[in-house]
Length: 173
Image (cartoon, rainbow, N blue to C red):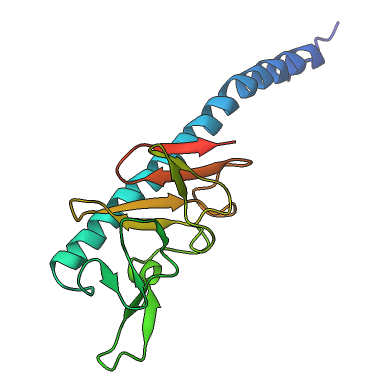
């Protein structure tokens, strides 16, 4: 009698491998998605702190107009959208750019126009139409609020992502 040389896997062995791989995917995918979301929130918070420091440094080195006035608007104790604060770029005063452009903030990643955040009893209210904003605190330092654009690199599906330079980052459903 001839022995057949059978190589390969049986159907049951293949199904067992597929089930094991499916279990691994079900367990790991939520963890990976959560890690990516946390990284996006952390990166927008780091950016908010960096923007506040950049603004303070630029003011200290007299690269911007004197604090708190910038051409066309004031960075004051009240929140103002970064897209609306303008900075003169030429000596003649004819050309100006927004503070968001000066600080190299992208409208594809951040909400730069809209409504400034509202504050009640020290708590900020942030929504999808809230703009990324800046204000000057009593000590003269800038405080920056960045709000992620829904299609940008900081976005988390179905949530409003924001970060305050002087506090922690947040996510709202």
